[in-house]
Amino acid sequence: NNAFTGSLPHLLLHELNQTIVDQVTINLANNQLTGSIPSAYLRFNSLDLDVTGNKISSIDSEICESDLIDNWMNGLVELYGCEAILCDVDYYLPTGKQEDDEVVCKWCDVGTDYMGSVSCASDVLSDLQILAEFYLAVDGPNWAEADGWDVMEQMETSADLTLPDYKDLDIDHCEFYGVECDDNDRVTELKLKGNSLEGLVPASLFDLPELTDLDLSGNGLYFDRDNGFGKIGNAKKLTNV
Image 1 (tube, rainbow, N blue to C red):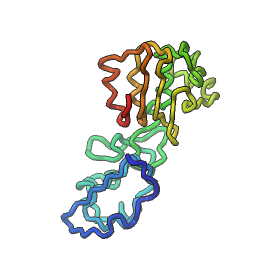
Image 2: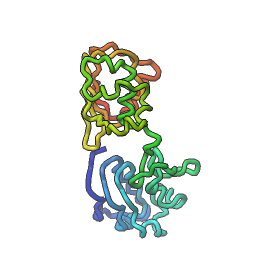
Image 3: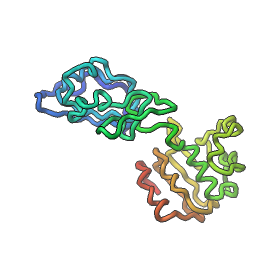
Image 4: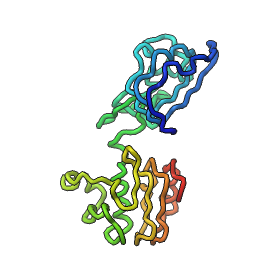
């Protein structure tokens, strides 16, 4: 979770004096790392490497063909092969890798671009869908300021986004009033203070994975006790409310 970029260095911890009983744990999950897991890591006898949620495209074939990695991932590589390190491209799990007999890496019907994917696009609401549901739930057509949002004024549900008329509009949610996005078009800020919002805030709002700042003060909003703030834990990066 540090926005690291670049490839995994071949000489990572190269000066480490390791014996067969030593375990090395490296957690680089949820960054922007690219490329391959290099065969140079075969020097680690017992490696617990977490690079799920990155942009890893491959694991060097020497690693998966080696009989030296049975102790990797706390012994799980011996049981599940390289899927114990990362689910293959076009497969996914919330953990990004196989950890037990019952839960194997799942096929993603719309594909994944990288290994170690933790979600499938067809299973996850997009940021635009979440914002559309929010807009319709809190009286969006009557907001004081709704630049960008008003393209959804005639929608009945957020599912209407899949209709050809809306697909053809190529709606850019990052241009909506009060919305800020990161470089990957994920919503980071939603600030609609005193904007005549009215109604029940849908719990899905907290499913915006990159949301850090939320300001809905000065409106006529309320949250369901069980399913409103009850899902705030899903917004793991939310720091300002």
